[in-house]
Length: 96
Image (cartoon, rainbow, N blue to C red; front, side, top):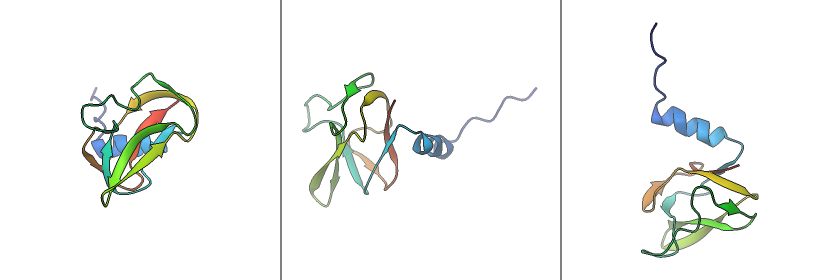
């Protein structure tokens, strides 16, 4: 029997974007998981977050925009790394 084909990164990203707990990017920019270089991340996998809590920053045109939790829950996955470019609508993390 043939093995199932591996999911492509684009397919995996599409699944993440459709996840009910997905936090998606509201803009094109560069993601930062901490407030400044060398500082602790805003959140880590397993962290309990409250609605409105800052999860990460996205820098666009020299402005740092706080991305806040749309609801309370637990961070189950972080899908971006600090310094990584992100696109509008790209899933950033999953909160369940």
